[in-house]
Length: 391
Image 1 (cartoon, rainbow, N blue to C red):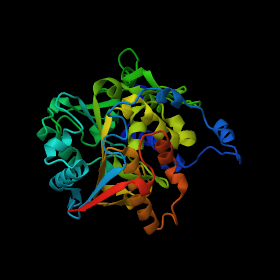
Image 2: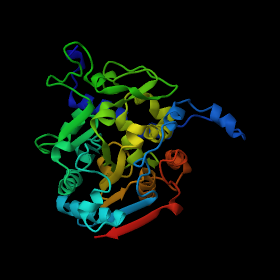
Image 3: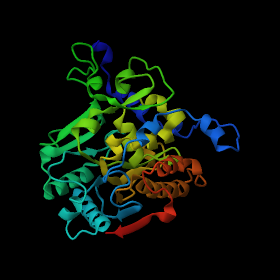
Image 4: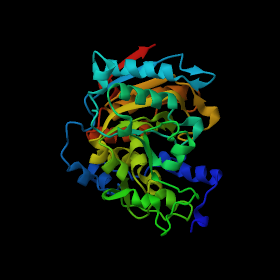
């Protein structure tokens, strides 16, 4: 069993790509022409979003303390020798936090969202490997500011869906001493996904009381299943979200996914649940929005800090070197929909300038419109308050 499930680096990243195929994102269900809204509704793939909507909202529910507000910080001094500079990232985040909150001090700004008694999860994105991971300059700056605000290091968890990818991209105990590094999908020292009893480590990490149900399924091969954890019509939430953290700070990368973006909502939705391979073609937009309605995300994600220092404008959410660019930008907001909409505008402008597409397509905003309608935030750019800071 162990030998069958050992994967080399090439196979590892081949399977990792299943977590976000840009080429399949904008392949929506083919809908026949209809004038009645109810007829359109009948043709959609059924999900359990109605169950999620029944849970009462809390004071921390999305869109959080500052709905419809986004701070964009830009600096041309982000890089030295093509590496992000931690000192500059720290100042960018500092200016953004003070601007968003109006607080007198950085400590007061952070304590609007978290407290020293809470377990704080930093949801990073290592999917594209070392070439395009959430940068350590941004992550370490966030950690430093949280410590300065009185949050103990042992209350911090850096997490993502795949613990192996975290380690591959430098999120290790050596680089982050005293901080937990956690992933839902795990391998042991022998490279196996299974324990001595043949049970997936990932299966021990999922909470079967919380799941996103969708009326579609896919059979996975022997290589793929360990990364999906389970098949069927349920996508279970990670215990990291449901049990191990009290608050979540979302730290995605400014990346494209076809003619749209893979930012706050995508980083959360596809990073927090299992069995996602089945969801890309029929339900990419719906999944990005609907999974975030469930309380383990909706009520715990209090802040979004988009690492746009380096990103990609095509070929995402993987890392294709010819499309990687320095955006020199960080976006901050409690409202993930508004933050994603500003990131979307940045991305579309870049794609048009590079000749990747001729004009913006409303299909690229579908997930934002769904999230808006579900009460997760503001998708109308005319209603978003954007404060742009140049340092």
